[in-house]
Length: 289
Image (cartoon, rainbow, N blue to C red; front, top):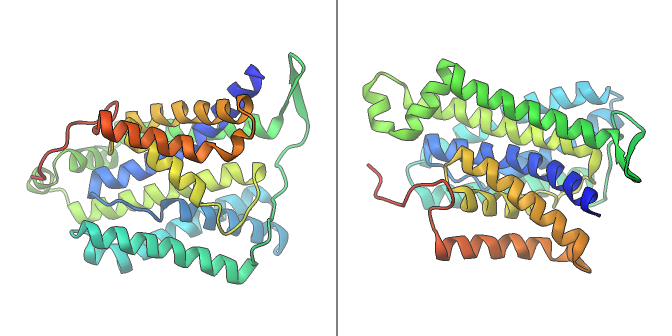
């Protein structure tokens, strides 16, 4: 059981890290709370299903195409619905949750509410201490870590990453230093949605695809960014694995724990907001410059 918890915690934590870091990126660079973030994860999963089952495309090619397509959809949504109102936080919240609901209804109309699946990229399993670990699980974990490493390299080693970090630290100073803050925000949005699409691609062989699959990750993602500190990438990474292992422990150790994991995430979020609103690695809330 301990090995089951470790495996499940690592896989869940890696997927949640992809989602939470993408969410924190766009919040840090543009102060956008994108509640439609996990809806893009859902759309990517449906795109992969459609390409593999209806068009006969190889799953790997379908995943790459879905990531590109969903990223473009995200940029179009940003330009049409978010950018014109991005200085009004309440309006952005309403617009993004409306986008998420619209995407859900579109998927429901096109694919109905049936539970769908995508075949694994690789079959077989590895046995460790009598516990079967599917090769697909190992592949999902490895690819997620690789993507996270790529994001770290992008932010730390490239001029785009420097611009994103500078804008997140102080938008006005970044503008004074010659950085196009609006362009940086759009690029960050593309990276953010791309990470959500990557999360959908790596997890789709391990889960069922349905129009409501974005809601559970949204709850956990919000709990993670609150736990780690809103806008803190380090906090999102650490918080993702904390809640990933917490979720796995609740599922495996508590009877009917699968029905309680959402409640645990919400409880963690409420406790952090009451005790330490800035989270583990965030800074105390202050007025916007």
